[in-house]
Structure formats: structure tokens, C-alpha cells
Amino acid sequence: MSTMYDCYLIGVPYITSVYPNAALALLKGVAEERGYSVKSRCVAWEVARHYNNDTKNLEFCNPVLNNLPYSFDQIRSSGIGNMLYSVAKEAMQSRNIALNCFSYYNTIGCLYILEILKRNNYTGRVLVGGKGIKTLVKFMKEFDGREDAIAHDIFLQYSNVDICYGDGEEYFIDWLEGADERDSITRNAPLDYVSNFDDFDDHTMLPVTGSRGCVRKCTFCDIPGQFEKYRWADGGTVADRMLFYHRKYGTKKFYFTDSLVNGNMRAFTSFLDTIIDYKHKYDIDFRWTGQYITRPIKQMPAEIYEKMSASGAEGLSTGIESGSNAVLKHMKKLFTIEDVHVQLENFRKNNLSYVLLMLPCYYTETEQDFIDTIDFLKHCQSYYADGTIVSVSGGEPLRFDGSGITPMEKMASDDCVVIDHTNPRLWYAGNNPGLDFKERTRRWLYVQKTIQDLMYNDSLNPNMNVIVQNYKEEMVNLYTSGYVKKFEQEAQELLATYNRGGYLNELRNLSVR
Ligand code: SF4
Image 1 (cartoon, helix red, strand yellow):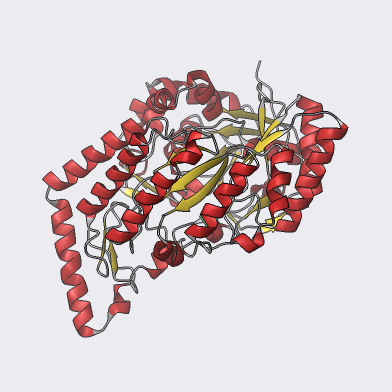
Image 2 (cartoon, helix red, strand yellow):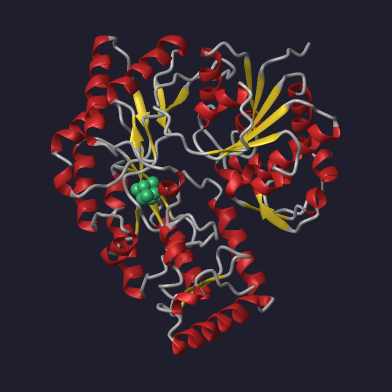
């Protein structure tokens, strides 16, 4: 029998994740602390766990993936549509429903649930929150009559729907208490809440959060634009939370959801000291991982690496992006490739492990920058051989997604980059004309081939062969349709016109469609 809750939280597919949904557990923890009854059900996690294979997860979720032309009825008759339908019907017993729209992958799933609620005359309130609400949704004519629109505009067409743009935990309580503001903003919540994972049946690895935002402003990254400012919890508090979850759920492995674990070195050091102390005092083999930034050598004393190793750090992901100092400088990564070499040695010395993330085809990348990147990947092979590097991800060629959040998107017109807003992969850099679409494809494929030849594991992209194949097909389709050629020609003409007239600034917000 269904129970009526104050709120029913739904984690909407598709998500690939090795740990339970952090947002749902946080909202449940925050609300229950204040006496509300909350049920969380992460369908995305259930599907991902069921298949334990990302390709199969994607296949099953295909009808609700963004930018695919499925109608409501087609989704309804699919396996994922059926599953979401029964969860939505169960959720309708509750006074309020909240949907987790974590990324653009979740927008169609949210839209589909809103449509179910509407067709079944649900009268409660619905909250949709997450980064996905700011993304562009295509092919939603069937739902809304428009070809495409930003997700939050679509969601707000439904009655009784509210949107949460920023940190959810404080707004969520206000919302449950009846606040009727439609738009919530980032509230800079103090990060001292305890999550509740009771509704998840696997606690082998749990997410933990020590900070939000980032201390850097890399030109291609949307993280700083999503948070008002970087903020962090005291390192001892984070370690206490891990101990609490260990005692409650038996968890020893943790995944930091932070954009970077070492944003504040004082908090990071205090976390390391406390967790090392707990490991010894309570004899718990804590392990943790997360994302990590490379810092200039002078900011990283040798003892930090020793402490990281003693604390149970493993498989830290870090964005190196390029083997070229010129590109790193333009990206504002604030480290050099020499810093990376020293760091690799320190990781090796202390038995720490690393996941390297690369970003090929940055818009200033020259042929020499590209060669430097390939040389860097080759240089890393000995670190891969001894386990210091556990994985290398070749990423995807640089995209301009039109969100306007990243510094790079704002710099585009001044840097003579013309963007096609209908396809984030289509852009033309007037200052670096050698890096046209065809050349970007070549370099990206070469990076993928180098990663394969060097036998690096790409654990972030277990279905990399499928991605490479899809991208090749997309490229061929664009070429054979003549679209790329037409776009690049028009971009050149546009740049020539504006260069002549000296009105480069007017290129801002222009695109070729
Ligand atoms: S790429 Fe990483 S270090 Fe750079 S701004 Fe984004 S989160 Fe911060």
C-alpha cells in the first residue's frame, strides 16, 4: 500500500553512478531533521545498478535521453517509460513531489513525469532542481509545441511547478513550508547537513561533500559560474560525517562530490589529519576518492602527499587537459606541465593513484600544442605501468554549448570564434583557422588512438568505442549534408566583414544557423 509522504523525491534517469544519489539523500536528511516525512527513490541509480554496464544502461534509458525525437506515447510504451510511470503514480500519493534534473540527460525524463502528473490531475506541488534545468531541450514539439527551449521554461509551463536553480537544501525547506517563489537562487548554504541514505539498499560507497564551487576559473568550465562563491566545510566536520556514516551503514569507501577536494589547503589538511587519526583510533580502513586540482609545486609540500596516502586517497581525478603550457595558460589552469611532472613523481613515491582527464582541441591549440599533448601522453606510460595512473580519459573535442556560463563562451567573439548554437561541436576559430572541424576530428581521434595504443584504461568512458563510432557518424552526416562546409564558409565571411569594419565586438551573440 502506498504511503502519503510530505514529499516524494525522484532521481530521474539517465545517470551513471557508482554511489547513491547525493542530492536525494541530502534533501531527505535536511527535511526529516525538521520533522517532514520524505521518501526518496532514485530510478536512475536502480537502472544503473541493475545493468551494471553503462552501454546497457544507456540503451534502456534511450527513450528519455535528451535530444531524441520520441513522443510521449513512445516513451510510455518503453521499459523506462513504464518504470517511471509506476513511480510517478506512487509519488502522486504524496503531498509534494521533487524531481532531480541533474544534467541535460534528465530533462526529457522530468518532462515526461510532469506530463504524467498533469494527465493524472495531480494537485500537489512539484519542485524540479539541478543543473539540467538550464540546458537546451530539443525535439519536444510533442510535449509543448516548440522545437526546442531551455528546460526551465518548459517545466514552468506546467501548473504548480517550482524551479530550484541553486543549492537545494535551504530552499527545499522553505518550499515545503509553502514558499511560493518560482525561482530560487544559490543560497550559500553552510554545508553542515547530514544526509540520509536509508532509502538506498547499497551503502558500499557513499558520497560526501566538503565544498561547493571552485577556486579556479578555467575558461571552458561552467562550475564557477554555477556557484556564487567557493565555500567549504571544516575538514574535521567532513571526517566526522564519514565516521557517522560508517557507524550507521558500515561504509568505508567515500566519493567526494566536490569539484575539487583540495580547494582550501587548510581544510584539506585538517580533513587528512582527522581521518588518519580515525583510521588508527577505530581501526577502520577508510578509502576515499574524488576530484583534485594540480597546484604549482610550491603550494604542495611533500608531507601533503604522505598524508593523502595515509588517509586512504586513491584514484583521484584531475583535469590536465593539455600537454602544452601555452594552452594551459590560455585555459587559466594556473599550473604548468612541469608542475604535473613533479606531481606525478610525488604520487608515485607515495603510492597514490591518478585518473587523468584530457581536453583535446581547445580553440587556441596549434599543431605544436597538439604534438606536445601526444608527447605528454607517451611520457605518462611508465606511470600507468606502475599503477600511479589508473586511467586516462581523452574526453570529447571542445564544445561551445551556448549556455553562456563559461568564461570561454563570453570570450568567444573577442577571440574571433563563431559558434553555431544548434550544435555545440560546430564552431570556427578565426584566430586559429587550421583547427577547423575536420582537423578537430582528426586530432581527437588521434588522441583516442594514442590512448588505446598505450593501452590506457579509460574507466570514465567504458563505452568509448561506441562514443568514437557515434562521433564519426555524426561527423560524416554533417559533412555529407554539406552543413560543416557551409557553416565554416559563412563564419569566414562574417569574420572578414567584421574585421574590415573593425566591429569585432558585434560578433558577440551572433551565430550561423
Ligand atoms: S576545470 Fe576544475 S579546476 Fe577548473 S574551474 Fe572547473 S572545476 Fe575548477
